Length: 276
Image (cartoon, rainbow, N blue to C red):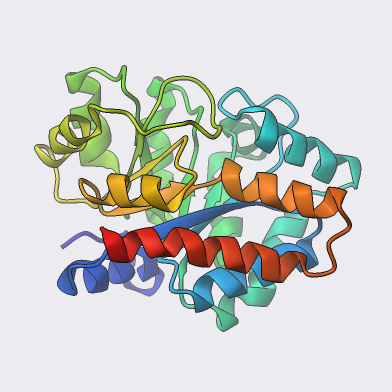
């Protein structure tokens, strides 16, 4: 059984258990908090949940992100320019928590967390209604402390592995992670790519050799075909930049149906799950 620290914060584990029991895979969409505003993000999350998304990642805007490509960075800058704050994210999640059943994960730079203090951040995240956290840039020497504090707050600690991660490091990440392990499908920053990494199956198998925790794949996953390819070897597909780009395109054309447009794209991505 894969679980988080406390039973009342187990939506992520429960969702993956249900999916595995039904031999199904998960779509994990990503939205930037505050982009274009929190009201829209609330609706995006609700639509994703209605379509059966297993987990939704909510990215916290940060001006100096090192892991994100230009599409997500642009969304960060737009949200920050509007005055978006971390407190706005927590308030938004509190408003929608009772209306969605999917797991909610905060993807946030450790620079923000370190400034606040890890214990306070995870307590506030848990109180808001988050079920897990991803710190994409946490220093190796801080990772175990972060995992322990996260577990103590009742949250899942999602570990990331990359194509360049050594087997020794993969073992450590796999044994520390709860909820799921995030396998990065390509070196570099986030962003859409023409094809998924050819050695992905080998990378996922390496993680499975150290734990039974679900493995989900992101970075470059942007089409239903990508979702299908990823889900042949993993438990779920994470899609971020492709979704954020469509939000930006809708804003640039002053789309009056932005939420519907995003839902339509999510539905198309979900067709890859059925194919898988």
